[in-house]
Image (cartoon, rainbow, N blue to C red; front, side):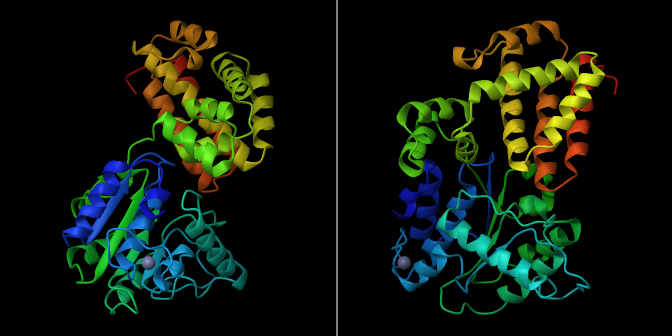
Length: 374
Ligand SMILES: [Zn+2]
C-alpha cells in the first residue's frame, strides 16, 4: 500500500520519495494537472509519509499518525479548502466558528471521506472560495510547533479557489517560510493562481493517467468488469474521477445526446434549443457535470480531427467528421475552454440554467460565427 495506493504517477512518487530521502523537502509544493489524475491523493500521501512515525520514504499506514491521516484528522495536517462564509464572520475569526453546527459536521464528514478516498471531490454547499480567515488560521498554526508530528503540513485543495485577499495573505507565508511548515497546494487551474504565488512554490506536474492505468483502477477498486472498464478508460481522458462518473452510463448514448445538443446550438432552431436547455437544467447537477464532461471529450476529439491529428476510430463518429467539415473556421480550443468553464461554474453552484444558456451562446458564437476581430 502506501504509494501503491495511488494510481500511476510513478515519476512524481519517485521525486517525492527522493526529497524525503535526501532531506530536501521544500517549504511549498504545487501539484498541478488535469482533474481526477490524483493530485490530492499524491499530496495526502506525501503528508502522511512526512508524518509517519516510521520515518521512511513510505508511510507504514498503521502507526497512530498514519491512522489519523487516513481520516484526515491529524492535528499537524490542516486541510484548507473553500468554505461557506458564516453569518457575521469577522476578519480573524476561526474559519468554522460562525458556521452552523450542521455545516461544520458536514465539513468533518467530507474530510473523513476524502481521507479514505482521496480521489473523491469534496462537496460543501455554498463553499465558493477559500476565505482569508482560513489562510490567517494557517499562519497562526504554522507559527506553532507540531503537536506530535515532525512537520506542520497544510494541504490547500483547489488552490485556485483562493480569493485575492486569501492569495495575498498566503504570499506573506510563502515569503517567510517557517522551519517546520510544509505547504501542499493542488490545482487543476494553475493559470488562475497569481504569478508571485507560482514563483514561490515547487511545481509538480501530474499527467493524465494512461488508459491501462484507468482501466486497471476501475477493475480493482470499483469492481467494474474488464470489458466495461476498457471502454470507459478510452473515454475518460486519463482522469480516474471522470472514469468513475462514467461507470454504468451509456457512453454511446451520451455522445449521441451531445451531438444533438450541438446541432440545436449551431442550427437556427431557437425553440428546440430552449426546450433542450430546459430539459438539461431540470437534471441533477451530477448528471449535467458528467454530460458536460462528455461534451468536452467530444469537442477535444473534434479539435484534434480539425487540426489533422489522428483520432482513434472508436472516438471518431460520423457526425464529428461532418461537423469538422461544416465549421472549418470553428474556434474549437476556445469552445473547449468554454465547456470547462461551465464545469467549474457548476461546481461553484452558479445557477444551472444560466450556466447552460451562457454555454450555448458561447458555443454558437465560437463555432458557427467565429470572427477573430473580437
Ligand atoms: Zn505510519
